[in-house]
Image (cartoon, rainbow, N blue to C red):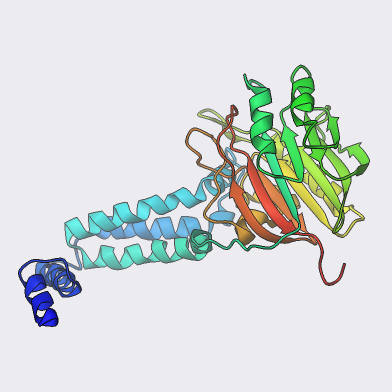
Length: 350
């Protein structure tokens, strides 16, 4: 009797599974009927289909887009994930136009986008790890440096990198972080705070004329790690010049050389690289190291701008270390979001 009552309820317009299935079947039937008997379904929507194919080609062959004119290739790669938003737009147009040609064509950019970024849609975080790291571009114009320092220290990071430090704000950060971190060093506009001893601390020349990168050995309970902190030059998008990034690219090459010369087998890079992992201009660095977000994060982990994050230009990269989890921290007084990662330093080969 209970089963009969349930079946009667759903048949009368309830919300049971049979009713939902019937509604879906009716929707598909209406869609099929709208196409049935229409001889023009293959001729309509040719422009939409061509746009879909073009979108797929841009995403598939982004590395072939030249940088000679306004660094167009790097600009495209910086915001590459956002091209996926065009797929549902093209799909909607194809449905409205009732074009079978366009519907099939839209599958191409959808497949390409999923192949490039589908892996980022799942949570790959693990529960392990023996070292937590965080990095934050604190913004030179930050009006609450002590509050920002407290916020990032509350993340539980064992090692914390800060970028865009001003000489006037450094004492404030030092006082605010002293209770949490016993060891620290500031080199130019970047700094490293650690719960574990630091040694072999030095500035890293990234061809700027002033110091925006450093290196230190952090002796953790699980072993020594060479930790680099870097703030690569900013890039600009200008109508008359395009994506201006020449100095950033030059500094990225210099940073890549320094990391390639590193003697310790376990290394990490924390900082604001002013570029994404897709940007070919950072290959000197990204070809050597793994992104913790890409390997063990949940989602894209966009970090800039803080008010509406559109790109992950703040990075935690590692080599010889296993990423376990990676995440974005809450907004502070900066225009960047802080990011953090949990990694496993101790390995079977340690």
